[in-house]
Length: 384
Image 1: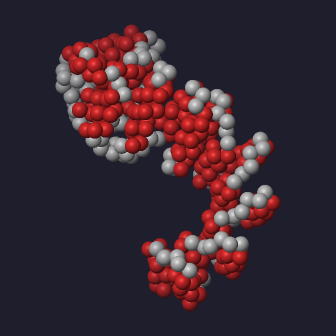
Image 2: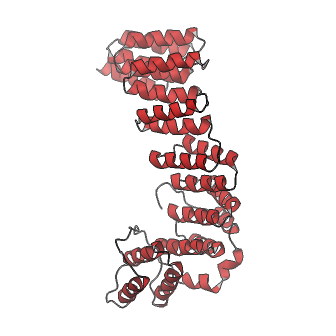
Image 3: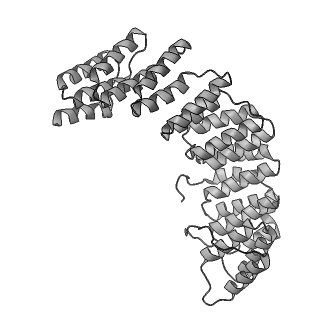
């Protein structure tokens, strides 16, 4: 089973098949391709083959067919992948038929190539038949399989069906990646469903699926170009991703772009920037942002204050961290378990175990239950 994907159930397979054309499961062409399944976990690697003409690729394929011993299935998959990238989809389907005639059984990667060909040929019914047969044979689809299906539906103008497939994947516990999200968001933008596109983009950020920030920014720009009204949610999602990747300068540039368009930052936006700047010791910039927050009537919350406390404690500025905790209480913001744990850690790092223990007691009195991390801080402090 591939990393990040859960084992599919019979019921979920049935739902996935309902999205396709049920009759195509019994069509001659699709039945032909699955008579002899080949169970393999060999990873598919991108081919280094380069051809100027499809005839050259076909000639090499025929040579491979009649070589004894034959090349591995991985090599056949690489060659077929090259033919698909040359956009000769019907040729690839024909060559797959020849492989079957000669008893060369397909694995999940070969079937994914076949599925891709059907999508490119706008034959979604056959593509879903490939997926259905893979599931019936117990083969675990790779993430590219689902991304290919979703993209094929979107390209064919069947965005609603693509969204249903996406929803079924999520409901059954599958974890879409950035390409999955990008494909769906682009499809929604094309049909003018900007509300759902932005909501999905936000979900992508909340689930930590941005990963490739450069690609996410490109998607972000595409959304704007295609008429999606970019709002504070979309900007904050990208700013947070940039901050997590330690690209603070780029995050600040995007922050300036956002405010320049009249979009007011909220506490989530400020928290991302403040946390990143605290971690990099940019205290002057941190204070400037805090002052800007207050000037814009955006009140710091427990996350804002905790970021400050944690960073100050790690730098050994325990007195300043203690003052921040006092100030947040004065402003009606109650410290939580994470805040108290950060403060305890600061005192432990300074060897002030008596005060650290007082913080622990105060934490319990105020209704914050210490977690394992908090107790580990105390144990480590006493062991030093």
